[in-house]
Length: 118
Ligand SMILES: [Zn+2]
Image (tube, rainbow, N blue to C red):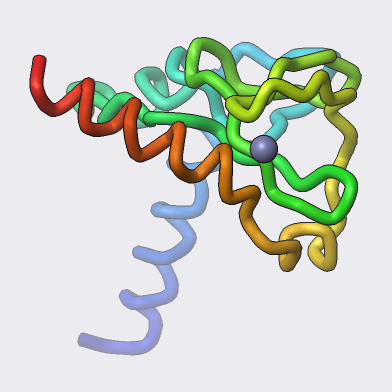
């Protein structure tokens, strides 16, 4: 294995990754994370994502959970598992360090147990 071959392989892999990303349906011109289920299926064909129990978003000093029916996007108003109505915003890295809402956590565990028993 020479350095030249190694760097060609890496460049090819990068080209493939860029081509795959460009093939994704972009919303408002750019890819946003987390990816939704449709984007994951396009990026990783054949890989069936495990259904999440809840999505978590920091707000007001706590990380709250919300139903996994749809990925929470900034600008949306979503009901948390503890019953609050949140305006979803772009959270900073610091916001994600907030402790988890105990009520949401308990509700998420109950949802997980309900999923596993079906
Ligand atoms: Zn909560």
